[in-house]
Length: 133
Image 1 (cartoon, one colour):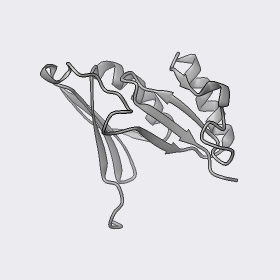
Image 2: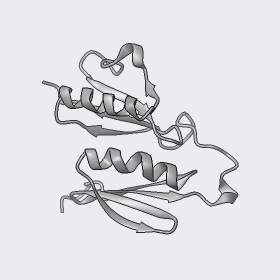
Image 3: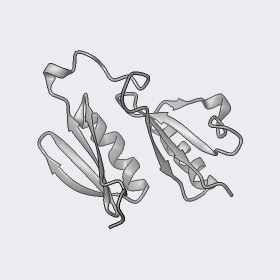
Image 4: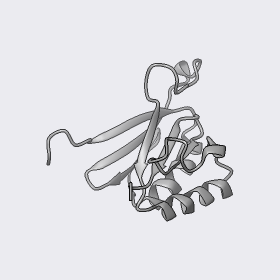
């Protein structure tokens, strides 16, 4: 295993069922497989990296997540092509997922950054970016 390769990311979520519904279809679309499930969490794996989603304990739900506070800003995923970015955008829209920076799509990140940006149920920003070709 190459040193420094990301092993996993663990996110605490406010509503595990909503997060499982949102992240499950999306990660499977990107080639992830369901990896682990337990009462308060779930994970999906691609290669040697996995993403974990855990239900936040009630005593910590008083302050909601916001990506502009200290902590995670967003997760960005590679897409195989610009066409794939467009396909995923259409799937997101059919699921009524909030698309961010819609008026600047697909270049909200700059002229050399072809991507779609959207939010998960906790308003974590997610990005899918095509290779620069």
